[in-house]
Length: 67
Image (cartoon, rainbow, N blue to C red; front, side):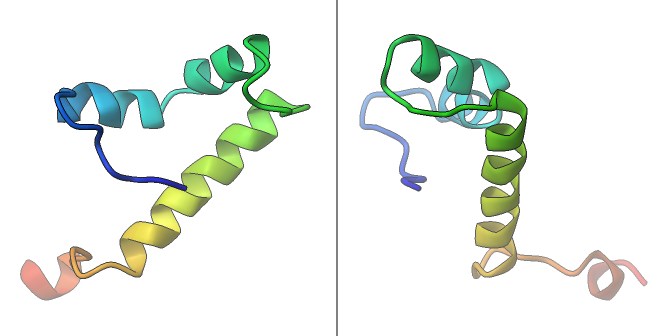
């Protein structure tokens, strides 16, 4: 999964497109993706994003920051 915002793109728009089911539906309709079940693909996509965050240097422990 490429999590790099394309050059000359709005980072907020890029983030919103990553987080939307519509992007998966669009890729399926355009033949870009061979996804069978959009809902399952969306859940898998979100799980990968959560995993990437939890294993990154950006992860924060809210309990540690605000006891």
